Amino acid sequence: MTVLLSTSEMAAADRAAMAAGVPGPVLMEAAGWQVAQAIRRRWAPSAVTVLCGPGNNGGDGFVVARLLERRGWPVRLALLGDRERLRGDAALMAARWRGPVLPMDPHCLDGRPLVVDALFGAGLQRPLEGMARQMVEEINRRRLAVVAVDLPSGVDGDTGEIRGAAVEARLTVTFFRPKPGHLLMPGRLLCGELVVGDIGIPEAVLGPIGATAFVNRPDLWRSLLPRHGALGNKYDRGHLLVAGGARMTGAARLAALAGRRAGAGLVTIAAAAEALAVYRGDSAGTIVECVDAWDRMLADRRHNAVVAGPGLGVGETARRLVLSALAAGKACVLDADALTSFAADPKTLWRAGGCPVLTPHDGEFARVFAHPGDRLERARRAAGESGAVVLLKGPDTVVAAPDGRAAIAANGPPDLATAGSGDVLAGIIGGLLAQGMAPFEAASAAVWMHGQAAAAHGAGLIAEDLIAGLPAVLAELRE
Image (cartoon, rainbow, N blue to C red):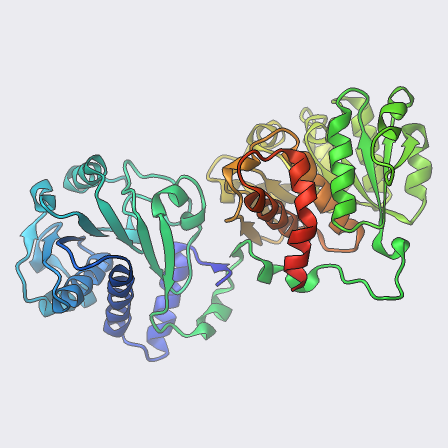
């Protein structure tokens, strides 16, 4: 269930299933059954309006209406368009419905607290308009309970963007695999509870499709988490260098402590001479060195990973530290000031190579990349251009690799919007890189761990709480 399918990939999965001997009507009947079952598990029998569109999503709606009516639910069905214009499996399911088919009109919602949205799902190709948009806006105005079939109508299945207007669903039932639009904002907020139903598509169809987008869950990277034997020592777990700034010292200290909590055997903060006292007065287990020894530290092969950017300051010093770390072949996490320092000439950073992990929020991303489009597309294009793993931070954080793989976070709560949260994330990634984890997997794992620690803490979260919560998250992963 980690795989995400784009709308075109899901259509290919449908075609492959039919080519393998699963008839289209069987798939549609199974889809309607999954929706009807999900409704019956959550609501007692009540008056329901089923809104059917002119395509296959509407065909699913006809099945839902028939199955609910058989169970004694009072069903009212309304169709967008003419019944005679339905084609294929949708026409067949409409023929199996023996009840009346009403024309689409807001009055069909009267006296019906529950609505099944089978208007468009993932099949929408343009912004909602006309009666369809009027229905969506009226449903939202009345705050009716909505069950969306596949996707809330008006939500783009690939981007999560709203096409003109979109239904605010309480429950969304999709099939076989979720789509990016179920996880990307603002679509995620409109889906409500998401259920993925099995409609009989063989798992084998995924191979030829070659999907490269994933829900960021542990089964994506758990097998690659660092494992340490009983005979190991701290040097086997890597030595992380954190570049510390002279003014905003808290950022590097958070990153360093997070790196230690994530499992790095040793962590050193390298800072300007005037700030060393501040850093040395903090965590006793963190080594502190003068940044003047940066090149010497990089020459030591035991220093195998670097975090640069949190509180570092923008300018030529940051550029030099970053470029020298990449030239030395270190696994790097570049955040905040380290990225902004290359805003005027990002190609210098791209040419340095080394597949660093870049961790921009939207503002920092815009300073170094000019890519338009949705978050998934922007992150993928940025990774391809830069040759780096790009972690585009936000409520729907996307991690994208240069080879096209991408993972979308689903577990980050709003509490993460607090000062220092990103510094902790950079440190977790650095700690995993120091232990030998590959960049894409390290970044994806860190995002999940970060979100899980935040969710476990809940309200009142500050950055330090994320670090304190990491041991419980790591224990959960080991189990």
